[in-house]
Image (tube, rainbow, N blue to C red; front, side, top):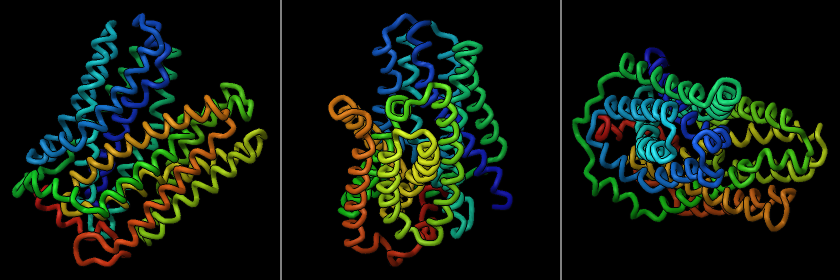
Length: 404
């Protein structure tokens, strides 16, 4: 990536800080409940409210930010996340913490939308998919290291130390943006109407349906990762924790692999992805009761799981290339809807059919995602003259109207 490499890596670091802030709370909810004097069910609102605000506010916040310089948007979002972590570390009132979960959630989709579009804009078209994959690596690194480190610090030092770690990660990324990110003024901004106009395309709604279903397939089972390994495979907590970290590390490698596959043939890769997930879930269901085979199953699961982010974003971006930032905000919103749907259905399966049956729920969502992808392919190429097999990022220069 040449001179732009450090900038793209800084964007990835920003994503790491944001994911650590968003998901790190999951591992410290018992400590929050204890230290702030609220029931565990109440503490859980810190997770649910964040996801809900991201899903609802994402597209609108991105539209409002579309006329602001990209560097200002990115820096402001990271500053808000750093400040929010500082508030978590200092407050002893749950209501204050809840408010400061809502505020950064508004900026979450804006940062992602701008970071993904800017990463593609900063490199030659043939390297744009790789740049997006690098940005998404921040997500997998957040799951692999940010969340476990947050949990470790809360357990062995203090809850405040865990949140100061999140603040530090966001401040470091903020410094990188201020020093390294080039000034990219908005010379010609797309009107709100032209950006909203992409919602009139039936093919876009099929792509959005695929995003929701892919994320539902991912999180209907991953959301109960520990539950499955403890109840079905009968592993103790320390082994489950080690496998959770191994899962995240494999995700980093799988993310890079899927990025390369998308560069070569995006349509085929997107089509095959749900099939791979069905096969992985069948394996997890079969070997679930046996620890040794299940370890291999977890590693394969992590490798495939990692592709869901970049694969579904690539698919949606084909139909939003003339409004890339708004399209990326739709991706963030609808992926969060998929997480909510998958988690709810997974919980229902656990309560009614038993934990052992969870993989079938994920497989069903993956098959539904495959159907949505195939229906979208039947509609033909998206907007613009490029054929269906063309790499969608080759038209990223159209985003000049947004990025300047």
